[in-house]
Image 1 (tube, protein in one colour):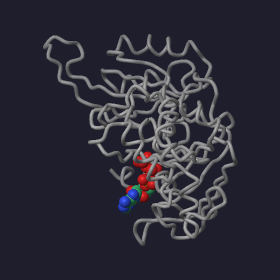
Image 2: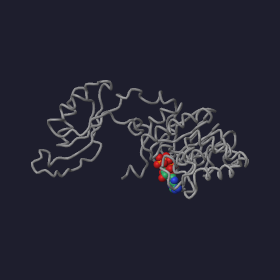
Image 3: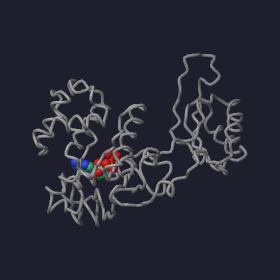
Image 4: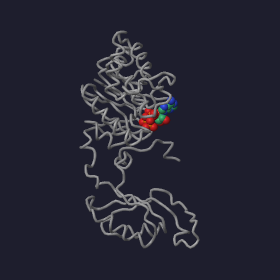
Length: 332
Ligand code: ATP
């Protein structure tokens, strides 16, 4: 349903936003497009949606070339950008009806189509609400409803859970899983567990290049305890690093944040002159469940232990060898 061959694109003559990317998405697949900020995810989706021309290579949606058969390709897909473009002064129902008409849905079918899509997305009770008054989660749903109105076989979703609270995130992921029963879905995200929960396959972009591809289970460590530990503490950081390094089972300790000087309001505070920092602790045996206890016991006499937990499974944490932040943030 999606075929991309040697696709390159850029916004300036000197820099590639995409550099020779090739992949296929088969009918009925849900594929995650993963990458750090600036990796090229949005650029790729915008090319597929016909909003940006590639510099080289080609892309097809449902067998139609996105440049030379743009209209047919556009008709075969629903694109939900990161910030869906909605007319704030409309009510949800009237906005969707207008959009259905603009997409060529026959007049008599517009209202039933809006109702069907709204029902699927939990928007039936929001029809009379002004779009301007909707929460971000509901605006996302209206954007998704808009994309579904013409019943396209392919859906492109750009960071569909970005900026949502945890409840809305879970609801949106459930919706996507449900959509997958009728559509081929390509969704971009930088949150691995989300991709893992809904995608059969993920593509990993790094600075415009495809650096890995496969089933999440093959690419990701499956045990949550395989993550390094994150220690947030306050005290004499250099000494704490040294002591933690000596703890049995610890293989490496890295200072993640620059140590921050903390001014304590309390004059007789034992740690008043100390600093606060975040350390990443790698364990020799990822399944060593006692290691956190030993680390806590070592740190407590030296300073304040603000938190100690497995590192969230972020893209940057799990694929340091495959993904890097964009140039600008690396230099800053
Ligand atoms: P994010 O997760 O932050 O949305 P992304 O993976 O979607 O990032 P893109 O938005 O596709 O990445 O950006 C890829 C590269 O192209 C980046 O280096 C970015 O700075 C650059 N870029 C994106 N849009 C523009 C633009 N309109 N003008 C100039 N450069 C741009």
